[in-house]
Amino acid sequence: MSQDTLRERLAALHAERVRTWEPAALKINIDQRARLVEAADPDAWVKVGDKVAPFVLKDVEGGDLTLETLTAKGPAVLIFFRFAGCPACNIALPYYEERLAPALAAIGATLTAVSPQVPERLGEIRARHGLSYKVAADLGNELGRRFGVTYVADQASQDAQRAKGSFIGDVTGTGTWELPQPAVVVIDRKGVVRFADVSPDWLARTEADPIIAAVRALTPAPAAV
Image (cartoon, one colour):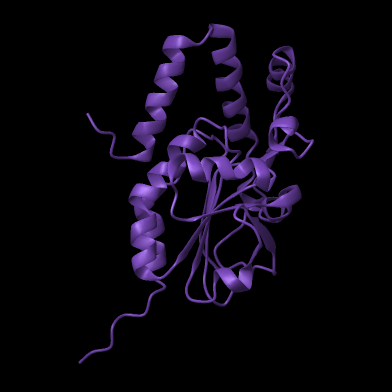
């Protein structure tokens, strides 16, 4: 049966892990997500009404994406995700291609998925899923940090990765453990945040409908005839 919501698709990923992962590894994953939820400080997150200062993202296809260019013709919708190999991100971004991108294109909004991963490694997720929207690198987590949405893995998660000979900083090319929490930020043409949703738990992400509703609310109604 088809999974119509992002929540259902991510729940299926977790259910598969419950069935197939070793209990110790599963516990580390669940505990890390729970700790991020417990430690969350919504006061530090980007908020509706915030004025966004200029920024520069690196388009995986080459060149820069700036606040000015992203909002030149309509609202900008930024989707923060972790990295190209993240399993949950490989569920979320195709979902947004199916359920979000067409509606935003019709409205005239610009959709961009944003990760700190270096551009030469980040582009594979766009190619893998044939995404129609932009994918861009937030070098050094500069914008993510400004929006208050970054985190660092807890010690148990770091130790588990090290035991497998892995380090997320090598995967992303950033050299650090810092990653963004899933977040969606809608910025209007004046550079003001009009919608913001942040999820400390990376298996809980924003559905398409509230994003579409927020962007539609920024679109002028047709003039009366």
